[in-house]
Length: 248
Image (cartoon, rainbow, N blue to C red; front, top):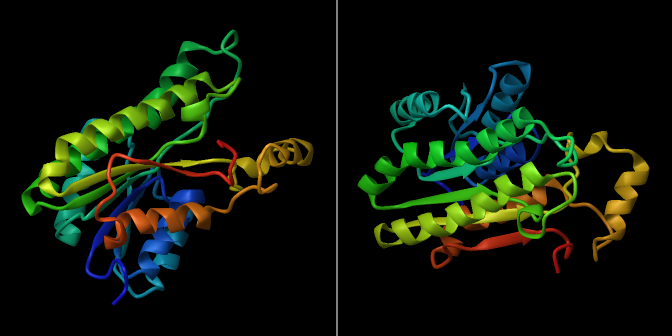
């Protein structure tokens, strides 16, 4: 039996990057997968097709994760389409990096709204169904900069630090109902977003990492699979760093 066979997972922001890798890994492990992104475009359709090749049920949904009403409507539709949500991965996120002295209110608000409020929105929306079934696993995507901070990323770091506090609080609130909540803190992961950095900047990042290289989205997906599965039934309220030793 596969690790997630018979379960339904919801992954936000999964048309590309780490979210896509997690959705693919879950499907390989036997899960039915619902995923969201801001638009129903070619990228979403391609991801839907790729995930579906693993033989499990898969469907993408266009949804603004930062909007509570849209989130609740999306979750209601997923429950109708799939019957249950056993695993939630709050992965949706953006960056608007700049030094604090240059940062606008719009840049601050946008990152907090998408990165942090979306976690509140989706967790609140799935909470009732998980409470009814007396089981569930919530995985929130934080970051090493949510722990250590980073110059030029005060908005992003604040949002990711907030996710850690939220994760620990939810773990304490819902643990008695057999609902676990953990966070993953990736380090320098090679994705489309980081791929836009120059070779020199990438090399500088690698030099700060004990393993001397960036990680792959699959490295994060493997950790998410562990947290989503019964291999981690006694793990909740934790932050697992996937950073090659960067935050050591």
